[in-house]
Image (tube, rainbow, N blue to C red; front, side, top):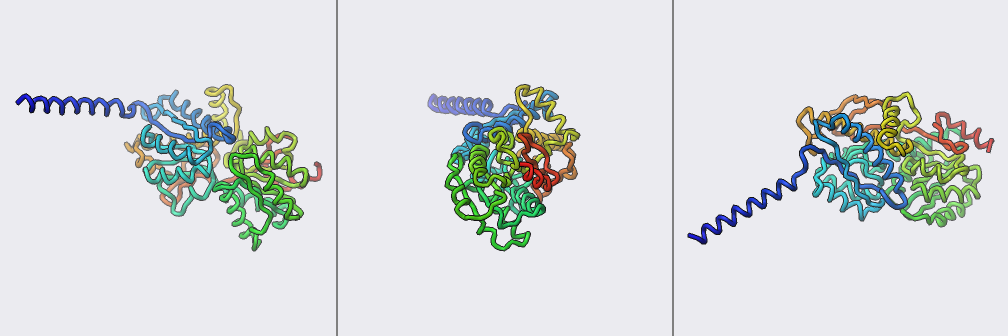
Length: 402
């Protein structure tokens, strides 16, 4: 009899402990957790920190206005140093331990190679990653990946079209990329664009590479120079520090060449590093940074000054801000429709049509379209100032001037 009583007491005690642990382990009902794994330190830290800053700026604005459905937004950002081996466990921690509703603004293609499969396996939305790589743009798209920005293929196609319009021939082009999935993605986009323009063997054009998270660009530069071609332009897919070093050295060999970069390079950091060596450096952008007539651009600058008064406006944080605004639009709709769950928010996004978030373009999604924007905005560095490049012929005039 006593033995049975002791057994029952132990069972009750164990159930009390289990229930207590469940209560304390449950996510707070007054917050909506959103994750991010990004380069917050290391050679690409400016990219990750800027994206995080933009997302937090908009989250702070929403929280100050009462949150989403009365719940405050909490961004849990983990540092992966732009390395896949760190990004994978970060992604699992955010999903399994932190119980985030989604992950937003992850930076980089090599990290996406490992985080996308995790998002798909764990059925958790990866929203607006800071990369234009094809791995995030499958056809039909992965249910758990939704993009904001134009692809690298669209950026390099814009470059090729612009260069051909001012008389630069494919045989006068060269390529320099990071030796990983990011570099491969941008390079592949350029190859497709050149073939579409009628050039049959673009893979034979001079091509140099460098290792991720290093400044070892010399071997790649030598490979381009040793091809012995009359280079007038070099299309680059890399991060700002090695790219800046490459441009400074390459300009000694090709002083009048045009140097083109995709948006991921980190425009602000690249411009600061290059200084006077920045003339004729072109960077394609995926957000409308210069259009101060757009309401979201105006709001971004005002909110950044309010919540991060020591920060300077930049393209990276603007992208983060726009991503956060679109994401919160989805959360607000999901809350109204009682679908504020991991699966529910994806259903909401796939039914979005002609949404205006104040950037001059309406946004629509469906099951076969998980990319918000396809526009590319080219910019150019002239006399240490970044300017919109609306007329590629100005590059010919600048070449004569310098």
